[in-house]
Length: 521
Image (cartoon, rainbow, N blue to C red; front, side, top):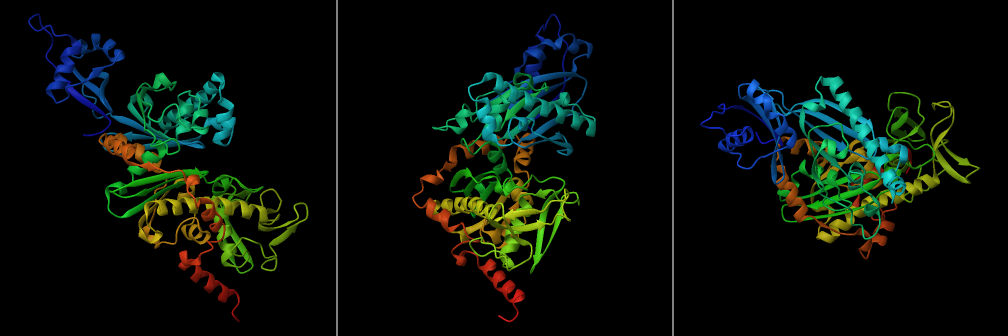
């Protein structure tokens, strides 16, 4: 097997006066004979050799963890325990942490657990947390402790689901953005945010769980970042695509509050990252919210009428990112807003004037429809803020294509990752102009690619070679330094774009809808 950890059953000769080889040497020599020439035994393992080896008549199972550049012997058990071999894969997200228990023999996911990141109590957004911990070791430790508590909750949840303790796992592969890794390790993440944007580390390597405060006795390997804003979660996600080994031009786009983008093929890889803003995840508008129960997650407009669905099939308390993008797209297609996003109060009685704000708003849930008896709406200001966000996302793709000398028509595969890429309606994303107007079969939703990549590396340690290739090959550009960046941004602040030739299917749909809603035209 080629997994990150390995369990090997050994039946050894007992020592004699003629061959008084030490316990440690006896085991390491047996491993060398099996093709493991360079293995280091940990102190904790060394301390456990006596009397275990003798009481078990030298019938033992050893656990090896193959970290890059080093193989560690981390455990010795009596008898043949190779059937019980488990590992953990983790996506350490800024909002949600997801952990899987993996059977290393069958590669099956035995259980999955997710929990809100305990750091949230120090700030919903990453920057607030960074500022809280800046130059304050006590606050840095608070953030680390909050992360540790989240992991403990996940360990307990997994054990409740599958009956296997994290203590039985030799290794954990952990994927997360650069800031999350700094918080986990108790490092000051101000370096991530401030010029010259040189973090304390982008490749921390491997640690024993207890070294970083986790209630975990095994080895934790942290997937390295490609660059400051292209964290280990992006490195991990790229492992799930393998497009860097293919000839066609591909795009990997992890989009949320921030957008990380990689474009290329087997000949080159170019990347960039930027702030998309909170709008795509529902973080704007008075009633914007995360994707959870009571959030509107989809909207359909027919002429002047609007219908919606909610997560949990409950009365709505607000709207999440996927609902917002449906709302914008459907309003455009049905003439509630024009190409610039301006609301037309004649289009529907759901477009109302807000005296306190002195602007129009689109009501997506009336007071009678909502959970708390209040009108839920998306204002003209909200729409314009959303268009700023979607323009940033579109411009990132546009800039990388220009920098590499390609056009949107050259893209053969477009991989979407992150919460927005997973749950947003593809047609709505194209209609609004976040994604390019490509044949729909070229889009591939990866869902949690960060977790999937961590699991893939856990089961195949050779993928560390791919990671090193990515670290050596990806060329990062700064979007803001591109001379026509602001011009591209301005052109993208329309629905879907000022140049409709870039969106032929949207133009066709708009024309069809216009005739449908106005049959006498």
